Each structure stands twice: as structure tokens, then as C-alpha cells.
Image (cartoon, rainbow, N blue to C red; front, side, top):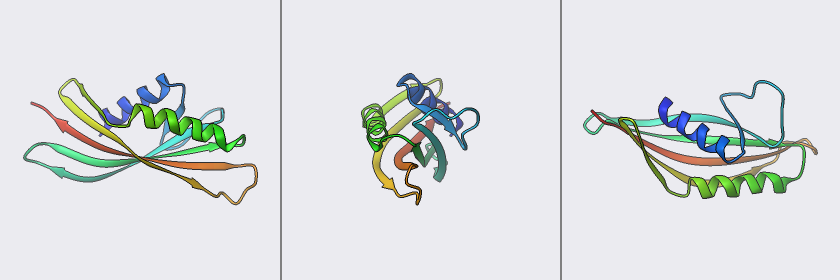
Length: 121
């Protein structure tokens, strides 16, 4: 999954989206996104790994900037298939949710990406 996560990071950064995996470190520049990954299963016969990447987006500005970032992410990952080295990836946009934070100034959005990765010989 490391290769597909690096591929996603490159795509997000190329689109001008502030992104880090696991937790945000360094100076905060809004809006920013933090990714968290789960692995659902591994099929030995075809070397396929499935998983989900959750992107949590944060801002202290307008909710619209989070929705604009969501539109960019939806466009990139509507149904992306790529081959990098000996791996093939399928990344599909899964949806968005606005999440209340309990803090008036802080806004949060959660975006789901579904991932499949195949490893070649």
C-alpha cells in the first residue's frame, strides 16, 4: 500500500492540495488534508490488496474552500487507473461528508477514496 499512498500524495500535491499522511507536521496552511488508511483484504492468488483512504480536510476559513478542494479530488480520483513499476492501482472517489467540530471557526470535511492495488511479477 505504500506505493499507492505515495502515488496519491503526488497527485494531491500536483493539484495544489496541502496533504500529509498520518498527521500534519510543520506550519499549518489552510485548507489542509491528513490521510488515514485501512487495508481490507489481500488476495494471494492475484496479489491484490484493497483498502480505503480517508482524507480529513481542515480549515478556519470558509467551508467553500473545503468543497473546492473536494471538487479537485473528485476530478482526479473519479475513477483513476494507473501502472507504476510492477504495480497497478485503481483509485475511486467514494464520497464526502461535512463533519461538525464543535468549534465555530474550525471546519472539517471527510473524503473517502477506495483503493485496489495489484502487484506484478
